[in-house]
Each structure stands twice: as structure tokens, then as C-alpha cells.
Image (cartoon, rainbow, N blue to C red; front, side, top):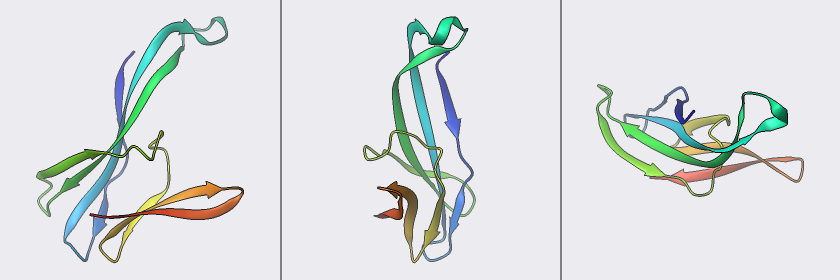
Length: 96
């Protein structure tokens, strides 16, 4: 049941590179509501950086995120991730 999920890459036109979020999940042995789905034990979110030919340059874990299913985009050479802060739209901004 362990798996890696990859989101769509976004193009950073300032630094000429692709950015992509992904997550690795591990599961417990406990099933959710007597179904075949197990509870998530841990979820680690990673940011992968690729060059223009889509060669991997670097990959780092983002501790601030616990789920990669977010809206994100590249602007001004930075990665912007949409977040809900007390029912207000906010952004986590990463300058890499």
C-alpha cells in the first residue's frame, strides 16, 4: 500500500526550470471503517527541481506541508503554494 504521488510540474520562467511536488505515504495496519483502505501513518512532501530538459537537479523535503494536493505555481523565480489560513487565502512562498 505504500505509494508515491506526483503532481504536475510547473515552469519557472525566471530561473528556467521545472518545479514539481510529490509525496510519499506509509500506512498503518489499521483499516478505515472496516474497509480495504488503511490509515495513513506518515506523509512526506518533496519538491523536485528539474532543468529545461527535465533532468533532475535537486530534491528536498518540505516539512511545512503534509499533503501535496495543493494548488501551486512559479512566479518571480519562487514557488507559491496556496494555503487556507483561518478561511483566508494565503501563500507559502519558497525562494530556492
